Image (cartoon, rainbow, N blue to C red; front, side, top):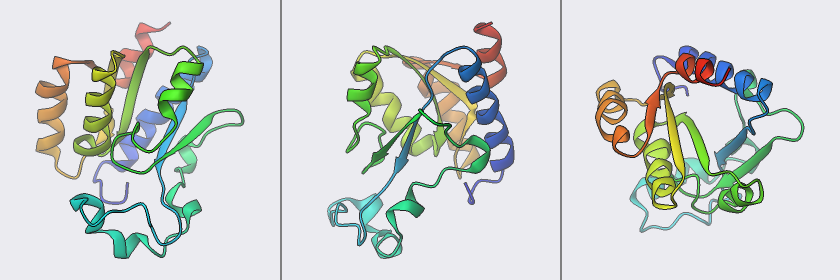
Length: 170
């Protein structure tokens, strides 16, 4: 979140969405990126992660999986670790969603052009219903964020604000 100009607003929006989900019995599931010590999961063929491998090699798995305290999970909420950009790749997310019989996902995340885009595409291919909370996502490039949320994502998902989502589930 440190590289996002609007990090505080995004965190506040996601916190509101999480509170609303909890109040309405909607499961909150977290997915974080995480690598073992030395990042052996990073292939030299993976352009995105290989460029950052030297930075990742000395980061402890616990540091990778830190979640901002304003949106941290409460006891009983699931935190899955992923090894790639999509929340599905290298994680047990699909197993967890199946176990809970979840067929509709509400996505937030950083970055819009990374994890949100990749997860959205994979979720659509897996036939999930999808809602993206546009103001619960952020990207280092605001133009890219807007293009994705205002044009591309709408092809496969409902794209709304946190406020709209919260009011639609009362």
